[in-house]
Length: 372
Ligand SMILES: Nc1ncnc2c1ncn2[C@@H]1O[C@H](COP(=O)(O)OP(=O)(O)OP(=O)(O)O)[C@@H](O)[C@H]1O
Ligand SMILES: [Mg+2]
Image (cartoon, rainbow, N blue to C red; front, side):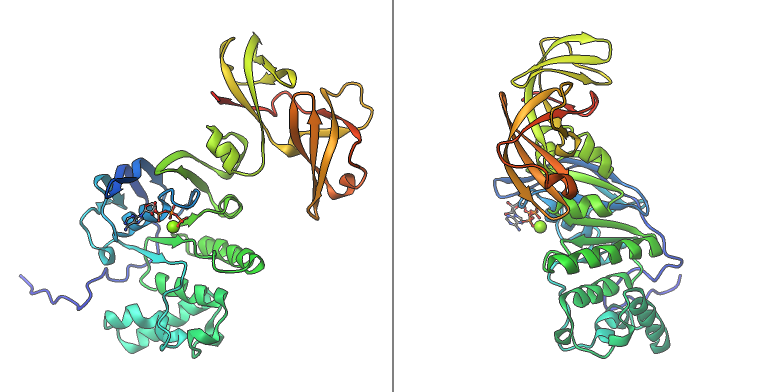
């Protein structure tokens, strides 16, 4: 038998080539004192996927990410990373690495040394460290800044250093906890694009925590929507946006009109629904039985606005207009309440407060959500 010499900070040897790992969470629960922070969380994240955990502040996103990383243990349930059940496995043995919101760089070390740090711990030969660090600085386009200290870098650059350092051990999954939230809107957008390119280039699994729905929808292969410690829905961005499972998701993601109704009759695939806005005819795959109460979600951009169209479903008075540059949000007063539509900038300019407009949409545009 060969004697094994334990390195000072044990970690996985650098595997090559890079490859993503699948992550599987089963029925995970976590309490802090009497507060239930996660309940019955199950998720399957695919190898190489860009996956986001999306939800409001306090819903348990960071706690779930910390459980994946190994900084927290769940009270119940199981977590697998790749082929390994990782409960009880320390963070540095999990083949994942985390990037935090606040960069956590060493202020007294240069960019190069910050990124080299995990390799120095492993006592890799100098030539190998130089090679690996430069490869990773190139990956985040910071080769030219190798000798700067963090204080000389912008927020976006610091975050790229943190990402390079997290990738240097070639983890199978990169965990990112709100990595862009400290940056201003424009820089956030830029770094988001870079993050997407980086993901495409290295092909490992990315798991992003964010409370920003636009961020999650624009970058992810799939998104898990969380609320109060539970996962409400998992799907690709279009599914989440177009077909929310419940009221929380419908309201949390984007703007939407929610209209309470009751099924009056079924005509084949068409449900005839009584609403405060009159009778709506809605096409659905499996429409609920007559008598069922439900909520209809209709995205503002699905509403077509017209002037003097006698075939429009509803007439409404323009109550307010909010100009946002590329489009105008139009608030419309109908007999049954307020509806919101959006008009492209070029059209929005024709509308004035007090004007009467006709509203129409396609019969598959309203989406049925169970219950109020
Ligand atoms: N170590 C801890 N001890 C006690 N309570 C905690 C601890 N960590 C988190 N919590 C609580 O658990 C809940 C979920 O916290 P978590 O940080 O996971 O939420 P989050 O979704 O990441 O929120 P945010 O968007 O604000 O970062 C919160 O109510 C928080 O106060
Ligand atoms: Mg958090």
